[in-house]
Picture 1 (cartoon, rainbow, N blue to C red):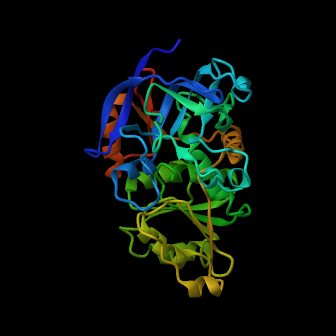
Picture 2 (cartoon, helix red, strand yellow; picture 1 turned 45 degrees about the vertical axis):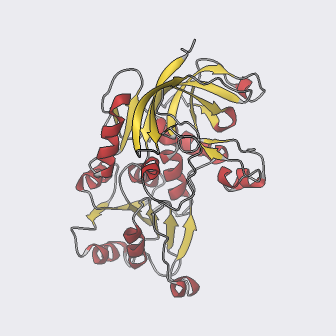
Picture 3 (cartoon, one colour; picture 1 turned 135 degrees about the vertical axis):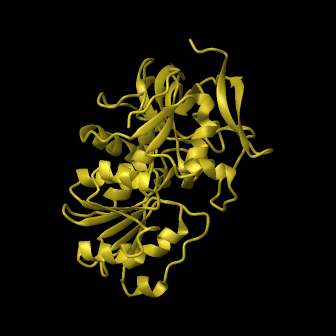
Length: 358
């Protein structure tokens, strides 16, 4: 039985900081599951709460528990039909969209954000997220974990993993083709693993040497520090015989987007937009009109494209490289992410332990 109260790391707009608060444990509605969080991981987009941005984040509750990537164990459920498909003790992962219908064409084929009801909210932003001991999630956005995945370390797959998988898969490349993974950290290190499992040749690009070390560990064929190596673009063109077949940008850096066209193979080369910079992107209409390269987006997943990514991860033994902390250490995790000193993903272990599975 869940306790009455729990600890939660909550963002407070009044001082633009997070605070470890004691709050009530929520009760699941008919369509919801009550989850004992086992692993919650930090995503770069969580930090958008602290930053000026024009990406449409709406803070409806203040303070609000941050975090939108987690896995956990079902300890309660609502009385509705969708919740009854799960049982107590199930280890599950889930996505963070709530209050949408999950059934309209937009929910099924685009993203829950564009639900025709206009009521969608995201846990970790508009609603309490997962850096807390218990959370309610919509059963329609949840799935039981494959046996090959560990509930205590699999949290990053339920945003970063789904995002990275589709960022690579949606390029529609054939085995042996070249892909540039731009940003080899929390998202990119997974993207490299997916690309190699799909038979692609990979160039990793980053400005942090520790991220490039991570890229090598994940199987990248070549890596370049685009800040330190002045000739990296020429080297990429030489290695690939004229440019990569796709450049997948996982970063929030506008400059990295500006650099992409120079390394994409003219003709059918693709720029895949995944990371979201604060500033709007600027693309040369002449390049697009004359077919120098194509532009495509890949979103961070819905309950309809979540399962293929998770099952692929289990089948190919793709796991997030994650350093684990305690809940009270979340400010340290944020500091490490802001300073680009983290490798892979950082998460909270809710069993009281903190270790690394790097």
